[in-house]
Amino acid sequence: MRLAQQRNRDVADLLAETIERSLSQAEVIEPVESASDSEVMALTQLQMPPDQDDRLSLLLYKQQAETLGIEERSELSALMEIYKEGLLRKAQALKEAVKRGLMQPL
Image (tube, rainbow, N blue to C red; front, side, top):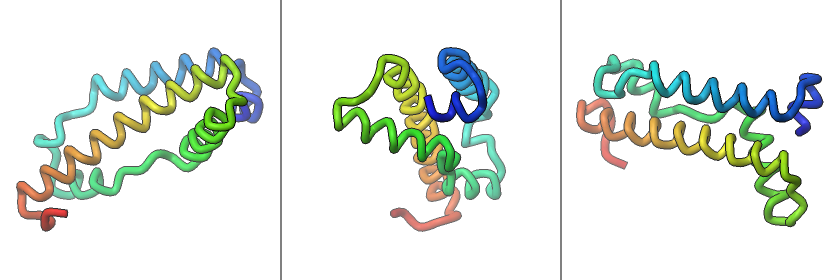
């Protein structure tokens, strides 16, 4: 909700855009196995953008404090999906980097 206010946007529109962007990126992302060595190594450092990470942290805090609104629940769900997709991509890159001998197993 704060992000929507900062951008002077409706929360529902911002959520829809975030989900759409996430899904469209998932469709065009090449498999990690097809990436170059430098791309694989870059993916091993993948992190959620700071503004999304801050918002996710705040929403998780509000969820734990049981002060999360309905719109915020939808936003939290969308951000969690983005987080999980990024984490999966990072894990795939780590596996591929080890497989190629670019790094030692963790």
